[in-house]
Image (tube, rainbow, N blue to C red; front, side, top):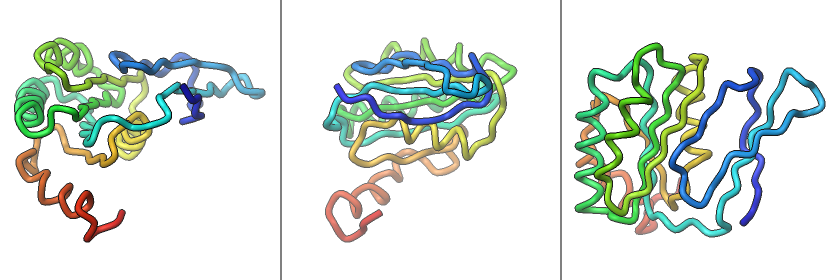
Length: 165
């Protein structure tokens, strides 16, 4: 296991990780007591080929259908993938709804990351990408404005070499 410093949060007790297999969160105060360092221990090599990050803010109404569609697609087409939902300080039940939806994920790795403050979509995407263990990571809005079935158009050029990101 390798410990990698992954992010700095200005609000103490504002971050929660769940269902991250073979990883754990180790929160330590930095020299400045108003900051909290987050370390995530991960295996040295990535084992999932694809990570899908879904940033979500007050998406309880639609997230269930989104997770179902993504999980069903990945179970059939990329069974070694992972799905990470990042709840960006929602005031509804976004994170609480996401957790039970992953019960039928089969062999897919699943994670729910949530924190209390709304820090913006960019921060949610960044936190999800930092937690991602796939060789290729993509993010998709919770409304699936780009259907998950379009993922091969993005992933295949990266995996096969014509594109380097």
